[in-house]
Image (cartoon, rainbow, N blue to C red; front, side, top):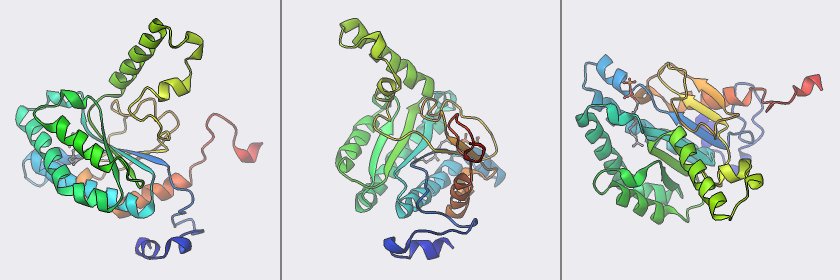
Length: 261
Ligand code: FPP
């Protein structure tokens, strides 16, 4: 089914009405993914945990490619949390190298596919030359107009909100902002995701059903989709399944069901 959609011309890619199909006019504008289960995938196969992360990087490529084909405006993936520093140093180092190598290997394709990459989190506190490499990639892709691909590294949702509150408080202190002016928009604009739509769909792989400090503010009205599949085994087909499921949700945003109105 997907192949059929992908290989149709853009003008033909609409009004796919069957319940089992994907409606390309009703896609989520921002998808968040908690890529969990790399370690379990590896140990389940008798491999060391880090091979799970390596395999997980391939899944990132596949899912990003699907977002490109579908024209999903924003994809944000959770790659390393502010809490992940508690892991063994060998695993942390492996992940940092993996991020660096991934970027080096993908930057050309990101440009070819018109992707704008951004790294969100405490990037400037990362070891070695990572921050420099990440900022360089952001600079290279900043004028790309396709999918906005955010990679959360050294990211924590509470930390993001605390930082935003501090910045807002400073402006109040300086007299450039009044307390009355503080509203949702001021807070939105003080987050890493400034200017982006809120998360419509949050996906988490490998069976756990929690948000783990990811995009707390941005997910206020997100629909959640959980799967037991470990991240390295997560396919484009399952991703499309999540999108189709999302399209059948009744999103009321605190209002009433249209049928009851
Ligand atoms: C959670 O699985 C995954 C991570 C902490 C790392 C995510 C990193 C990748 C998917 C690698 C590639 C990413 C990019 C952006 C190139 P876990 O290790 O906690 O798995 P477990 O719960 O089974 O132990």
